[in-house]
Image (cartoon, rainbow, N blue to C red; front, side, top):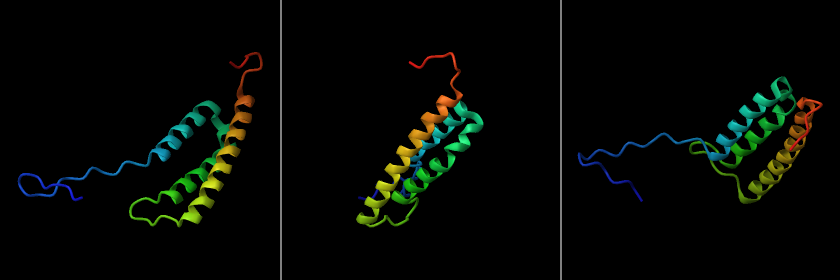
Length: 105
């Protein structure tokens, strides 16, 4: 379905495409990780970069072609494994920066 033209006959202005929600969430996660871990962030950054690559591969920007369904399945499996590894690394790094006398809760 095409958008309706404006009253003066011009095509309606299109808003710039917002970044995919998953990438926006990843950006927020990276900022939070940096704020909490400081320089230890470097320990998880390669995994977060890999997650970003996987998200972009599954949803290419612009007019990029989507991968075939079997390739999407492989990419999702790899992305899931990377996210699980990143979760484990983040938990370990959080324990490393947690003050010794403070209990979690």
